[in-house]
Image (tube, rainbow, N blue to C red; front, side, top):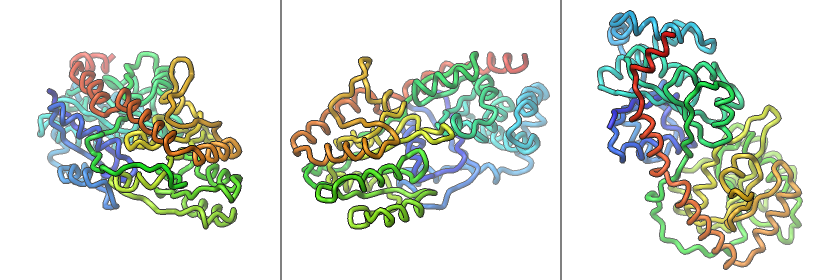
Length: 405
């Protein structure tokens, strides 16, 4: 199996559990992995990712002589790399070549045969330059931010990589529209059910809801608070908001303005193990995703899969990615929760009232249905096999021939 160099902009990041899950799953398929990043995050992180980070190589720390080697080693490789460097517009050309050479030097030294980057921004540009200097194949995974908010030379990157990964069919379609000759595969963000350590019995009678995720625009937490205020106080459930992000202060002020402080708690960011320890406290996970005015949206909401993993019923919205994930070919959702109109506090309030007043046996049945649905569609080891097969099928010789056209 090919040895893979993974490049991530920053690692480890508390909210980006999908990166570490993917790397560990690809290692279970007997791929050796070298992990690279522009910076080492010193903030709190998932415990398993902290273990991975012990082998992290920071590109800024690669020495001058090592960096020069791939630039001077092959004029043909340098010409190929410079073609991409000069075509792209998003990054300073000298810096991009230099960091690409830093990565290439380590790819060569470590014997890596493929580079895979996460996020279609600077990490992908650097990976493409490094792959051309090191004469290896390259791929990258796009996430919602890279394509719907700040796409940077994305069409060029799509046509310059051996393949690109979309996390949903909708994203795959949009990426192929950007570059009709791109090789785009779909690899869903999956979950690792072996991380379940809890044997707690779910009671489903707590009258408590859980929100779990970043406090950012696409998550719709402001709509959730408006919906909570609409629900009659006599039947209003408790809500725990687990996560942090740029909107936390605004959301706390909104909560106070709506007089919701007796019902709503902001618990801050928590490690992945927190859900394992506390999922039995809740009746339902609520995920009120929205599309922002700028068109930014979540593309493969991992939190829905994490809820199903712990047999939590789901209350979410009809955003594209949620429909793709949860609806069948007839547009019907398995009985694992409730889907309501996005960005509509009245619809969400009705969903809250419905879910919190269901008897425990109905909620338990939803949880069981969700767990079965997850195992059928969203296990990380199933999804990563698709990525592994694509990497194994790459031929860098063909890639470099095309890059010179």
